[in-house]
Image 1 (cartoon, rainbow, N blue to C red):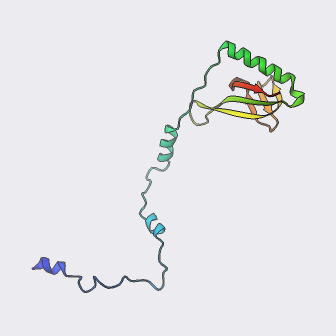
Image 2: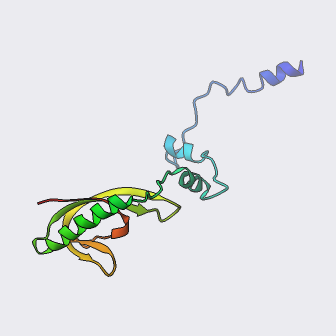
Image 3: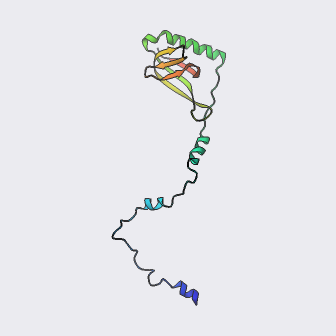
Length: 140
C-alpha cells in the first residue's frame, strides 16, 4: 500500500500549468544549455592535441643541378633589379611551433637581392631567405 501512496503523491499538482515568473525573464535555451556544458579540467589540452595532430612537411634538399639552375636564375634576376622584375618564388617556411614547415608561393616585384644576408626582398618588404627557395620563375 505504501508503494501506491508514493505513486499518487503528486496527483494534485501534476497537471497544473508550469510556473512563469513575473520578476525574472525567461532564460533562452542556448543559455540554459551552456550551464551544462562540459568542464575543461585541463585547460589547453585540446589545443595541445590539435597542435600535435597538425601536419608539417620536412624541407627537401635541392640537388647540385637544381642549386646551380636556381643560382643562375637569381643572377639573372639580380641583373634586372632596376626594372623591379616580377617573380614567383616557391619557398620553405619553417614552422614556429614544431619541426618541419610548409611550402609557400609568393608572387610580386623584387626590390633587392641581398647577397650578404642571402635573402630576396620584395617591393612590399617581404624577405625570403635564399636558402629556403626551391623554385624561381622570373617574369619578363
